[in-house]
Length: 62
Image 1 (tube, rainbow, N blue to C red):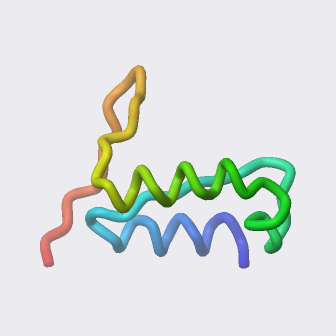
Image 2: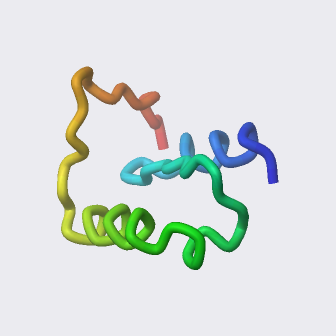
C-alpha cells in the first residue's frame, strides 16, 4: 500500500475520511488503540471533523 493508493481510494468515497496516524504500522490498533478508537467512534457517530479550514472534496459526477 502506498499513500497515493490510499488517496485514490479516499477520493472515490464521497463520505469517506482518511486518517494517517504517524508512528504506526499495520498494527496501529495495538500501537495506538486510543487514537484509533476515537477516530472510529467519531466517524460512526457522524461527528463533523473539527478543522480550522474547510475540507474540500472533489465533486463526483457519478
